[in-house]
Image 1 (cartoon, rainbow, N blue to C red):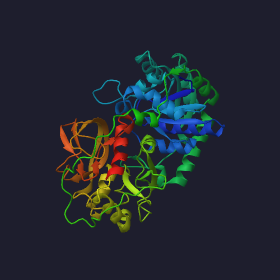
Image 2: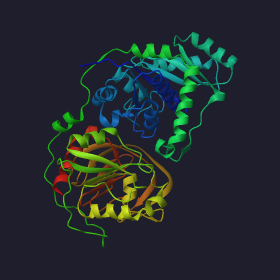
Image 3: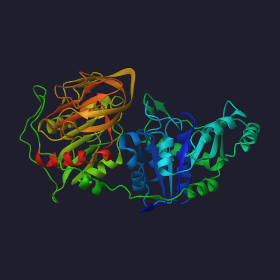
Image 4: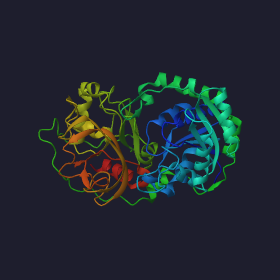
Length: 480
């Protein structure tokens, strides 16, 4: 199979240079021309893809060589970009920054090489003039396999400033494909983990994306950028396919006895029937809404391919789980911001506890772990796990190598996966009698909880790297 989607990678010398503004603005500007634009983000970021989706009308997808492996980058890209006229890939951090201590692994540069995509460097020019040429020359020459093919100058102060920058860059051989003025910089609200997600400010986010598109249209050479994207050579290989991935994954082992004890005095322990839809599919409820915005699109696709009907619900608004729910996935997000509202929805908290104590498979990552706790910052949560959660001043951030410690609804003990932590909260205790993961780096430790059908942990994982996770989860929905 030949993959010939025109594509650009939007990178920068460092974080804070304006990648998100430029990438999102380009996506929206090209989409407004009638092009089908495929949005992508390098790394584990969940928030930027929400803005990308708003700009393009398509699902924002991540390309993470650490979580998924280098061999899946081109197939996942082709899967997301299927049928599109153009793909725009927003980088992460600085162009050559990747996983700590792992060389180029998971860097924007590595992804650009794997996709054979031209790179456009977004440079914050606010405090320099002629030096910009040395900076661009250094980035363009550092790795000959990385094709830095254009520059967009950001935070330019005046026409004279622009003139000096252009004169300097004339000698670098890297063309200027856009200039964004300092006075026109856009503000998107942030808090403790980055930008505020689209789901929390949809109307304002629509306006922000429109403003980004307008700024990019006025300051960038869209025709030149499109021509550059079309210069990307064809890739060979097949697009990733969820159904094929599930079929080729190892068959899930039979259910194992429960490890670890349930908390005392659960609210309900009924004999739970095995609900299913009329066509035999098992309903897997996936938490969404403003409090639970962190998810990878491939997870739902894998669950569907494994035989589930995926139904999204909002723990802030819905008082019951979707009809027929026999499995529950609660991903990441910001429950700490919505703790009072989540706590006030007592009917749903009880429904979640009843499902979990009845033995149904429940997969909870980070925010999901907090929601299943006894309390979060003093507010009662679902009480599935006998732990207390609270906000912390310390940011926990980084990639993790992990191995499953206990057999669970997701994996058998010994299964190796890579994950990512990103939170400013702590749970006490940090691990149960049957921990979820053994983690290496920054220190060796166990963390998380396996309890009846529950697998709860701070670790964010990408199931495309281990599609058997989805297959096992759905099989447990059938047998629990």
